[in-house]
Length: 450
Image (cartoon, rainbow, N blue to C red; front, side, top):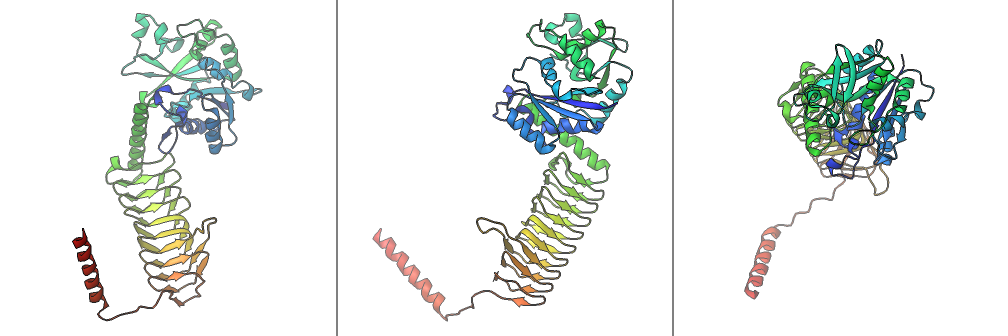
């Protein structure tokens, strides 16, 4: 059966004390809303609808930057979760399948859990995701009779006996779309908060003789983020799970707690990651690479057997071929470094192609920006770029060519040529001693005057 996702993302997040909508606060380099969307996408949904409210323009921009096919609808007034889900009705008109309601501030519901809800929906009209809470606190409670979910009661409306129930409501619900909207139409707001609760559809479904059940998951999957402290907890939870997964996959993390990963980080087996490495979004590292300490990678691809760092920075568009070396205090941006090439020390390589087996000397800079536009540098295979060379783009260095240390290269260099572009050295005998005596005398005069 087809599935549609309805992701609620309308909350202001007052406790975040931020101008940024709550669901756009990042976990592992991406808005928590994107984590929720990605989890639901494992079902290959026919439709995805995000319900925005506070900061709707920002939520819309972030959502469609991730996937332009996602519909965003706006809840103008925040009147409760049932009212929020109802805003998706128009976007799902004519959809004949199951609607799964997720939350943009609850980013860690796992694909396996969502799949189990989908399976349970084959035998029940409504499926709710519950969890056993270590401290049930103010969560809504699931009132069960065997495998049947009779109703959900909010904490503020619960009796003392109902508050003793440990099985709590995550808010995640799966239900046939047409039935879901029919049940929502019957929801009232006669409760302590005066809101339209999505949870009320369980009692309404049971009153119609329909079946409801609960699927349970680990409490960690239902972690909601409502404050900066909870955001930090969510980040820590994600990182712990992602690091453990890499270790299980055969990646060596020398100091796992110091390595930070993005939601989409991919690292191949037998790769070594030294301490204090940060992976931003969009990084793939193939098997057998070495990422040395204090390096930062984002939007890049590192091939098998490459070595990066220590203290290296790979920016978006960096493409390292097999057995390349990028060393300490080197920055690579929007550049291809071909097989076996070395950029070992104190260099910036941007908007460039570095040919196979080329050697880039310390302090080399591709001068790629003229103040208005970016320009490309090509360094040929087997080229040797002398230390402290400035390559003023656009410029082409031929295969096997060399540049002399300290050169400023402003025009193309042919294959196998040596290019020198620096002022001749001038030596003036005895001048250093005379200059020093003159400076000392000037200083002494200033001191007498003061």
